[in-house]
Length: 633
Image (cartoon, rainbow, N blue to C red; front, top):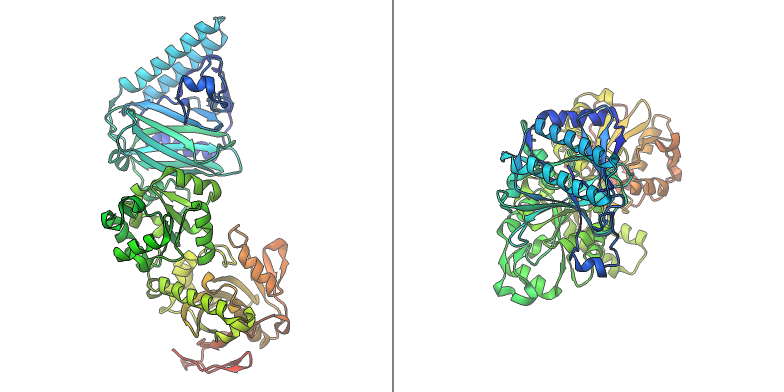
């Protein structure tokens, strides 16, 4: 519910799609009891009443209070659901949605009665010939009545979630913040960032975590506001209350909720956690307290080490003096865990850009942890696809689905592989030669094997992490991999490994080849070997194998996801041509495939290209790209 405002009592109507309406009604059936928060239109920078005279953003409503939503909070009735009311709003600059009260729950029946009273009262105020002063008096009285009936008369709370159901009616996602704080404005508070993606969003926040930060039995404020700049997106809130649900979400869902993500699908996997330092990785402020007076956040250090074992990388975005900060990290014995640290006095959004560039990973695979709402908002304003966490979420990191990835021997070595990549970059800078000549000097070697029990776990892990160079745009399931091992009729799975004179990259790619259609159904490759012409070498090998069957060109399936633009660039570099409106690409003939001889290829497949077994014999050395390669295990 929301406060009744004189002159703004008209009720609009919304027609929701049947699937969205069904989801809302399904949630209503789960609600045993709920709060009846009275939402109002407020300003994040309010210093009432002085700001009414001096603020350039002050825009009066009919009751002379400040207008912070474009058309106020509009009451919306949903067609086909007589007892469902919502509120639609568009945030202006500094606008926030705010409710005050104690946590009391009422039955769904009482909510329906209150919504009926709200409708009837609004109609009476709208159509009766009262003076505006009388309308204002009645509107305030109606708001007080709803607040009393919904809060003061409620029962003690058994709430297990704070639930937001919202239809984002625009085509753009919106970063938001939920804050719960004492009305005294002193003491600790709870704050989580979340996103309202285009379409319907259903997001649950764990009340247990909330109550550990704020005393919910006392008076408190609940605030919902955009992160960073205001949004012009129309948002229709169908539910924004505490609730007792009869079937709480499983833990994996709750973890995604703590991230503020809707539970419509699995959480995107995180490749790198970017840490703030002061009052996040350690307690205290380095420049003020000095290294000796800092206290390491033990939960953070433990999470860093455990996630490192899972193959999750770590970096730093901190406003500090770099030498002093690195000295502090050495003091705490954790310096080695951080790659590409950005420690300077510039904006943290710029630091995030640099980290993503140096590690060659997408920003949507980053999570940024910072104790300061301002810094999180600044990053959000520049990188809306970077996920944001406050320091209060550190205890939950290890349980979040973003980090639920298969753990293999190679994932445990991922950080060391990136260190080797730093050595390669340094060697290239010192070499003083062209990039292609430098690649030749690196003695890159690609080894191709069949999919089997020994490499299946790593292939599955790689498929969960790979976005930029994923041609099909999706991960391969473990069931698909098992089927490929035991049913050759579905095609053959080829596993790609790579090494050079600096070290071993391990397994870096995978392809599913359909023999009958002379096509590649799936191909994905780690960004660790991006631009090193490894993909050129693989497709050269495949075209040579196809040539033994009289096939000159191969078809590669492709699905654009918005995140695999790098794959399209590589296809263009290899002279592949788009067909079927971008759903596939066709290769050049072997002799026209550029740079296929930069990387030497070793063929260790256990069957010939026609699918016939080699009687269990060890793969014979193959001469490819003009070089004889010895097979090795």
